[in-house]
Amino acid sequence: QPSLGEPYISTGSLYLCLEAFLPLGLPADAPFWKDAPADWTARKVWAGQDLPNDHAVDI
Image (cartoon, rainbow, N blue to C red; front, side, top):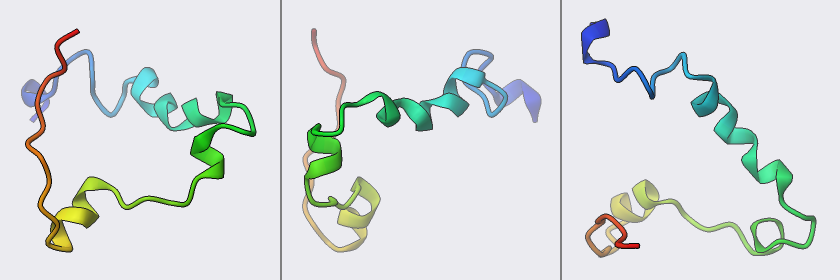
């Protein structure tokens, strides 16, 4: 169903595909590399944790 996909964000989008490599640009001493691994949202929800509602950030 190609008409359901957004033209600016789809599996063919190079920008979206390359997003996985963004952390490689962080310095070696960044918290991303140094801190202990943290559970992601889906794991927290399935573990029964109560999470705040997700909403847009007002900049």
